[in-house]
Length: 296
Image (cartoon, rainbow, N blue to C red; front, side, top):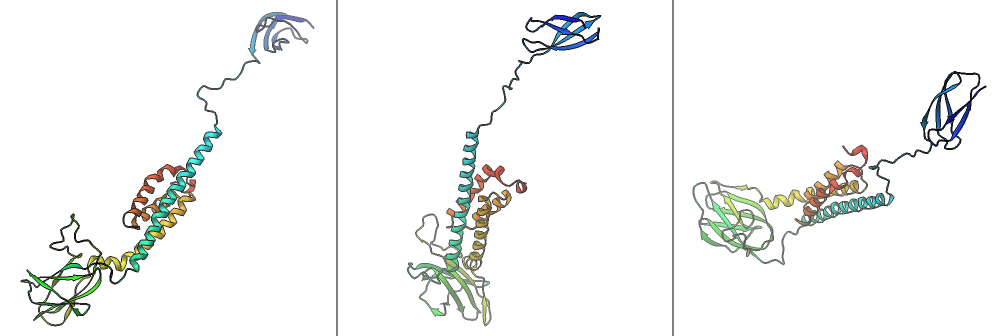
């Protein structure tokens, strides 16, 4: 069993390898000094060549662009996420509660605002061909002082509220209209009240020839009082649901729906819609935090 002497190409340390009955081949031997693996080529019991296979002291290098996990940064991001979730949920919730309050106040709106000042109301009366200058006006079946100013226009004074107005004239059918006069300031400089605004402080009656009576359409404000409170309350409830969905990060799409209806609830007329719009603008900041099943 011949011994072959070799020199380690890594540390130049002399070493020996004992061949066990073989005279030719390629063998591996670990250097006793540097622990490197050496490939030894032997032919006819003679050393032909040595080659370093690898170095055990070679260290694995970390890529320069490798980003280490920062636990502190993750904690900050979680706190930031929680902050925006709470803020957006609160905005939707507040807008919806304002809507509930507005809807409730409209639902229980008083028949008349007894503490308000009287407002100058213009009643315009005409038939198919001309203005009528000799008509009788009844407010809630009671006569009221009226002043004729020409062109079929009669001026009366009423406080804001709901009224049943009946207009009659000789040889004409009585015209009946239910109206709601909203609280208003006739001194507003942005609006010219001097000639009246139709449906607000001016109402036009068209009289037909004949006998009996005819109902005219309610003014817009009264129609709103009849159906708006229910819609506003419904929209507010959807907004409340959207606030809960947002806070629990259940569905981004449903959160958008809730925020939208919190705007439509018209809470405090302007403030509620403004808060809802802000919530809609901020919602994309937390879109990725919603449950995966509902992200799409």
